Image (cartoon, rainbow, N blue to C red; front, side):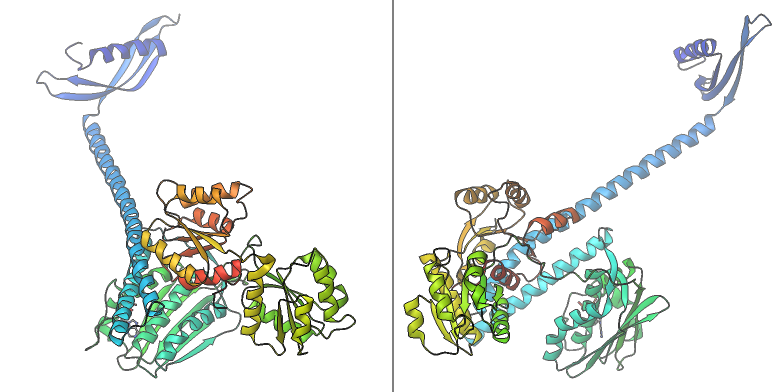
Length: 589
Ligand code: ADP
C-alpha cells in the first residue's frame, strides 16, 4: 500500500472517508508501478452491508485517467498562458492609453505657449514687426497648429483603436448640424473663391453622436475644400433612403485614381500632388471611417481622376429631434454675476435698440416703459446702471433723475441720460453721470456705460481674476491676455497657493487648470463648492486633461465654463469672461 501510492496518507484518508460517508466518487490517487511509471487512478467506492445492516466490505472501482489528466493539465496550462497574455495585453493597452494621454498633455502645454505667444507677437501689441518677422511668426503659428492637429488626431485614433471612444447617440437634426459645419468652413471656401452648396431634405434626423457626426462632416468638407482648386464647387447633400440617412460630399476637385482609393483611408497615407507639399496629417479619413463605422454606417468613395470625388456615408435615421445640438458656449448659470442695466424709455423701439446694443456686449438688460414706475422699479431691481430718456409722459426724465438722486437707495446708481433733447447742462446739475444725444452709436453708448460703471460708488471696479496654472508659460500667457483686456490678475502655480489666495481675498472669478501638483483643480473646485463663501464663485476650467465622462458631467454642473486647451480657447475665454464679468475698462466691446 505504502509503496503503491505516491501519497499513502491520502489513500488512507480515502478509506476513512468511504467508511464514514458510505461512498466516494472520483477520488484521484497516483499509483506507482514497479518500473516507476506513474498512473493517475480515479476511484468510485461504496460500502456494502448484510441484512442486519452490518458492514460487509467496500466495493471499489478504479479507472486509469492518466491520459485525460495529462490533457487537462496541458489545457489548463494553455489557459493560464492565454489568460496571462490577455492580462499583459490589457495592461499594455492601458499603459499605451495612459502614455498617450500624458504625452499629449505634455506636448500640448508647451505648444500652447508657442501658439499663444506667437499670436500675441503677430498682434503687434508690443511693437511692430517687419515683413520678414511677420512671415516667420506666421510660420511658427502654422507649424504649431499643424502639430496640435496631429496630436489631437493621434489621440482620437488611439482612443478609437483601444475601444475607448464613447459615443452618446441621439436624434440629431441633420440640417442644423450641416449648417453649423458649413458656417464654420465658409471662410476657408471664401478664401479659395469656392462655391459651397447645401442640399439637405427638411426635417431629417440621424441617429448619431452629435459631436462625432459633425466631426465626420467637418473632415469630409474640409478635405473637399482643401483638395479642390480655387473657384471650384462643393456640394453637401443629405436624404432619407430606406430608414437610413445618406450624406454625400461631392467636389469638383482632381479626383482620386482607383488604385489609391483604398489606401487613402489608411492612417498617415497621403496622395502627393506633384509639386505640392502635403498638407494635413493623413489621419483625417482613417478617423472619419472609424467614426462612421462606430455609429453603424459605412464610408465610401466614388471618384474618377479629373472628375472630382464624392465621399458618402449612411447612418440610421433618428426619430423626432428631441435635444438640440450641444452648443459650444454652454449657457452661463444664473450664479455668474453680470452687469445689469435698467433702460427707462417710453418709446418701445428706442428701448429695444438700446437693449440690443447692451445685450450684445454681455450686459443683462431690464426695460421700463412706464416712467411713473421708474423710481420704484430702480429701487427694487438695484441695477448697476440706468439709461434714462428725457421726453417721456406722464413723468419727465428730469423729474425721475431728481427722485433717483434724492433717494438713498438709488442715489449711487449711475445714470446715463439718452435723449433727443440736446441740453446736457441741466443733467449735470441734476447728477447724471453721462449725457448722450439720440441717435446713439453703439460704441458711444458702451463707452459711457463703461465709464459710469467704473465710477460706481466712487470706487473703480476691480475685476480681479485668479489664474491657477502650474505651467509658467501658460500662466504668463493667460495673465498677459487678461491684463491686455483690463482685468487685474492674481496668479497661483499650484492648488495650495490657489486655496490660500481665495481664503485671503475672494476674486471675482477663477480660471482653473485641473492637473496641478499636490491638490488637483477638481479637488479645489469640490472644496469651494462645498463652502458657502465660495459656493457661487465663478470658476472657468481651462484644461488639457482628457476628461472621463464623470468628470465632464461634474464640471458641466459645477464650473461656469469648460475650455479645452487642445482647441482654440483664447477668443472663447475672453468672450465668456466678458459675459460673466461684464466689460472691462479696456475691453473691446
Ligand atoms: P489629410 O487630409 O490630413 O492629408 P486624410 O486622411 O483626410 O488626410 O486624406 C488622405 C488623403 O486622401 C489626402 O492626403 C488626399 O491626398 C486624399 N483626399 C482626401 N479627400 C480628398 C478629396 N476630396 N479630393 C482629393 N483627394 C482627397
